[in-house]
Image 1 (spheres, helix red, strand yellow):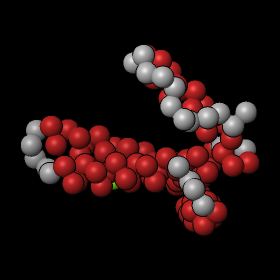
Image 2 (tube, helix red, strand yellow; image 1 turned 90 degrees about the horizontal axis):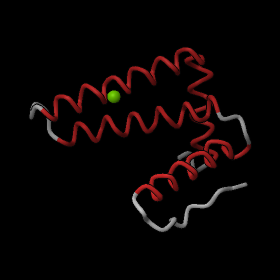
Image 3 (cartoon, helix red, strand yellow; image 1 turned 30 degrees about the vertical axis):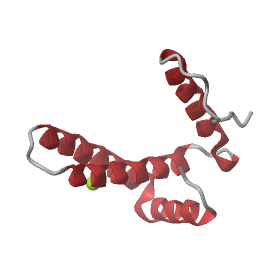
Image 4 (tube, helix red, strand yellow; image 1 turned 180 degrees about the vertical axis):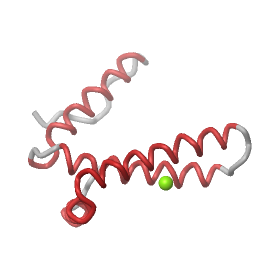
Length: 104
Ligand SMILES: [Mg+2]
């Protein structure tokens, strides 16, 4: 998740530079690369390090999408949704809720 104002500014600047459509295209590309990497890994064609690199690319692309779509201060909306969805996973696994908290 975007943790600092510096990260936020870098993503904002990237979106400004590439445009919203360009940023969304970059997201699609990165997700596609991760899907391909996972398929190749399952077939033993690439090492795990290459999958991890693609995971990081997607993580960055997701943060950029959060900057693009979640206009609330401090990403309140997506953070709350994340926590609720995480709790749902914990419920499904009969795990006591973690220390994650909802902002609202
Ligand atoms: Mg990539």
